[in-house]
Length: 400
Image 1 (cartoon, one colour):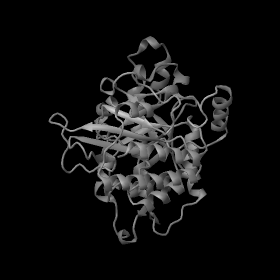
Image 2 (tube, rainbow, N blue to C red):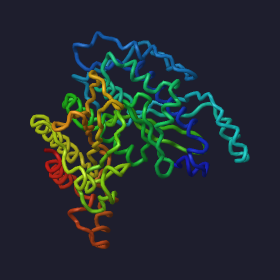
Image 3 (cartoon, one colour):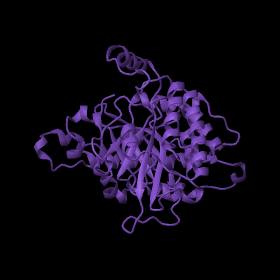
Image 4 (cartoon, rainbow, N blue to C red):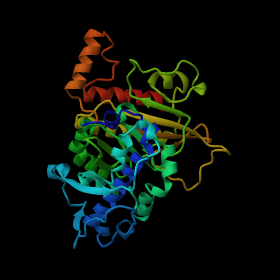
């Protein structure tokens, strides 16, 4: 796979940000609508007679109409068993793009003209049935229109404001309403996601909204130019409100300190030792703390059972005041009110769950332990069961 940087040799921010975002949004809108037209997902048998016309009838600008089907494939999640065939299934489409790319950047010589010719892009929806079922689990029936609206092209400017660029052409987007995130993933992570998608769906269905594991609501590949491919996923956003203090907590301690001074003077994402040095603990009500730790234990047992490790607990701290109010009806799955401070709200969830304990991670462990002489118990690379146990030890330390 060739990433965007390798193809054009330029920074996304300087040239292609708006156009890539638009392509991604077109792809999402097309495939979500297409899946709704092909599948009748019945989350509960009691809902079997309810049709979800709100998405089926959604208008998508400059996108080919999804193929008409005479009848939908009924998938009753109470009885349907997804298989490896469902994991490997793909739905391909050519999605129109209303370009051209920004042709004012003439200083890049003939580069722009090559992209200006792009009028459509090839896209693939991976495991469309499984992710349609995951969307049905997560998105309340009365809010299906809102799910589509989250990716509305009319809110391009708001979405661009929430664009974060990572290494090797990767990027991270937040929907304009901050309910969902779009994140690029590499081939290895996509393979891992598809391999666990059936187990993930069954577990999240059983957890009945209690799990802190992210909901993956779509997995797509977008092919643009000369073999450049972007793989990306849609997930629920654990931090739907801007949090000045954010922490990534794994339970490890080697190389897990980023800040030097007091947390009040810091910005960006802190790590385990930063949290322990500055915040110390999270104070929740007794019942809420017990329920949270029990659910984290169930979640980590599940992740270790399917060979996953290196995940983190993401913690965001939001201060409620006159400048940062929060409405009474704001119901967010990841929100936990502080027990010792009514002006403080914690956003908590498990992230980065796709790492298998594979040969690369085993090699990393060998290198750090035997060549770099790092603490073998304190590094991140551990077998899944040890990782889960150590993670829960840290959770018992930070929640009070």
